[in-house]
Length: 207
Image (cartoon, rainbow, N blue to C red; front, side):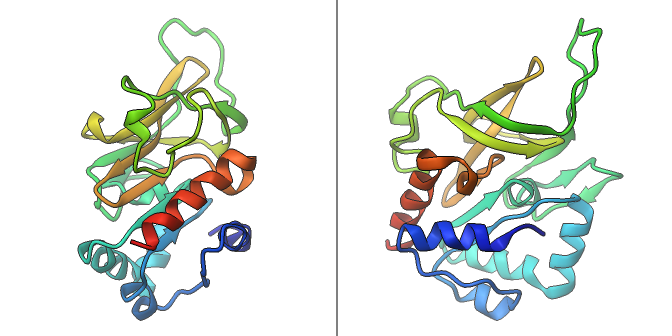
């Protein structure tokens, strides 16, 4: 579903021992998991269900182990997506995935997908609101690298870690619920600030 090896290289860079697997038994018993991905939501979910990875990830989360979703992985953590139909997600965090649409009063067209650098904006309470999350130590307003046409809408706004604005639309660009973390952007493509996210995630895996 994506260039898994760029994620693995980022893990290696911060000393996080990792391996690429589609074995549900390995996922179920892992200390932590990273769910990356690019492409279509429906196809991604079908692939996971066929391999039994959906239930394996649910079991890992039920054990209290950390899970990091990236890009499509973030979206699949939610309940459903409207991408090319209506598709069910993992439902680990209640919410839905919607497409970028014209903002009110905008006579133009939104360029989709969003490709490139954009800013993370913290909610009220920065920097404390990012403490003990993968964004700890990242500057409010930091730029990260995005590639996506759809975005996450968590049901509970309290899980939102950062928001980003694209073509007049403000949306959730990262969230946290318990030990589930997710980013719409690609930390592994986002320079030193992105690598800091992997370093923080490693600290959660060591707990």
